[in-house]
Image 1 (cartoon, rainbow, N blue to C red):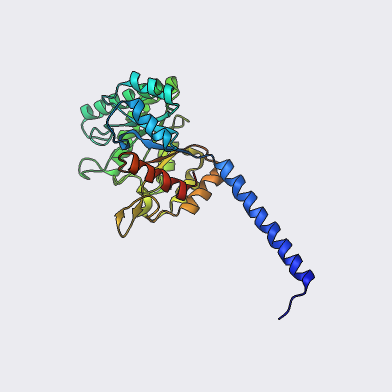
Image 2: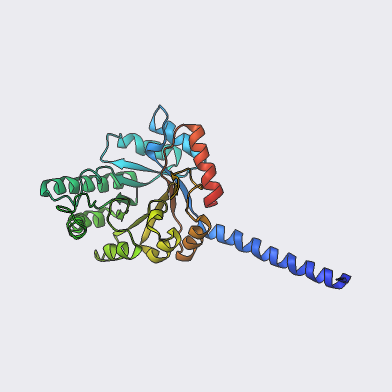
Amino acid sequence: MTIDRRDFLQASLTGAVLLAGETAFSAQEKKGRQLKKAVKFDMIRINGSIQKKFELIKGLGFRGVEMNSPSDIDKKEAVKARDKTGIVIHGVIDSIHWNVRLSDPDAKVRARGLAGLRTALNDAKTYGATTVLLVPGKVSNPKTENYDQVWSRSQAEIRKAIPLAEKLGVKIAIEVVWNDFITKPEELIKYVDEFKTPYVGAYFDCSNMVKYGVKSGDWIRKLGKRMLKFDFKGYSKRKGWVPIGEGDEDWPDILRALDEIGYHGWATAEVAGGGEKELKEVADRMKRHLKI
């Protein structure tokens, strides 16, 4: 088979145009995505002040952090460190939601859980954060805490906190984990939508839900604008927890899904962390797999 010079030049030109188009599209896609790289505060495992910890992650390319609340963290020190370093405290994690559950059969425990959520909302306002991450409940004992009870009890307590969330301008972001509660995107959609307020949305973990069979990208597509933020680890059905990028997460599809719903926000790692060496590896893996 032969090809003349004119055909060769035409083919070369066509290939160049296609390549240029693909490159431009990729650049535009990346520019439009605008993901912001963050860590959980507990991942920064070095001695020293909060400012020193913020300076470390800033030097590694992270732009934000999530704090725990209730906690013994010095909030004034944290705000001062935020202002000096430029690291954004973008969210707060309800630190007691797992052990002091809003779904507990004991009303006194639920009341303590609600108090913890309110504390987290107030602390989020102090930090300038936009969300409080909340795991609403756990089906721990089917005899006293079945699926329907967890649903109704947790919703009842969250509704009590919504007026405060609206007053403070802080959203409650519902996360589902391995708690035998809400394992399908349709369930999370229904749970969130029943509150009928923009101050309750979803916080999606791309790794937690791998074990339940629905691709993370499809969760994102179905959640759409309900998804306020997302975090991730690395999970393999065969190996268990693994480093970011070595699990069963389909990162190209996750990124496509984020683009499809127009997500422009925080991408927060949730792994063991450590000192500068370990956090640099986290940053490198995020750059490689999340393109940030």
